[in-house]
Image (cartoon, rainbow, N blue to C red; front, side, top):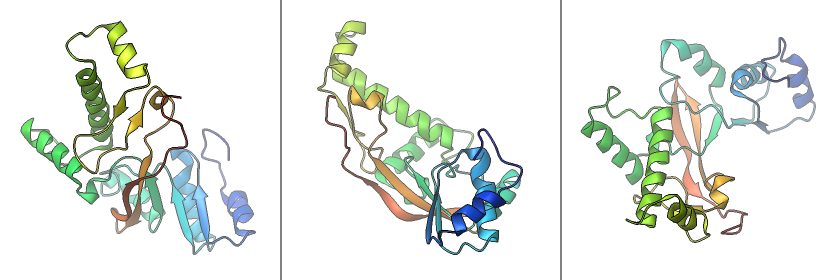
Length: 202
């Protein structure tokens, strides 16, 4: 599929997929193309499970601008490494408490950008705690990148642990699957961790 896309016509791609008579399709394309292809595949008669990696954008499906997207994705699965707010883990509840404490304009609603920023901030806080009071560029590098630092969220149900320095190059080893139904996300596979193929410290 052309990048950045979307292509003018999805039918050649739909035809190619349908020739294999699949019951599962992994739509691994960019945000510009995934919704159009998902809708075209459904219109082409696909009845199985269609999963993608880019469709979890909290708040978008229910917005006026997201109505067409919601219709295109109805029934699709989204695999996300962002902890879904819909799951209400201890980690999510802590973010909601913090948003309330700072009187966030969105209330307790966690936007995608806020979710990512919160995880990044928590990572930095844990790194600084690990380094301690003797903080400078050398001690920070030695502690974080020396092979002994592992990031873990203080709350349960948060992003997966990350060993460093490999954490600079691979994502956290956890994910969830949410399903698009009636302009909303529902948790199909709860957020869970799996064994990372990268050896600690590598």
